[in-house]
Length: 64
Image (cartoon, rainbow, N blue to C red; front, side):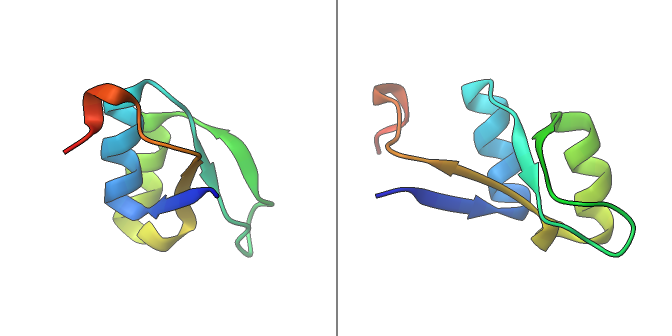
């Protein structure tokens, strides 16, 4: 079962785990699955709910 993080939590996860993010569609652009962290930060400043990352399980280094 996949877990979804959105907004700034998704960006922090992607930074820590070196992965790309996804972006939901908006009036100016379709949905995308190849968003780099720097671009995600710019988008999140305006609409953090557009940014997300899905993952199946946390890597062992991130287990609390």
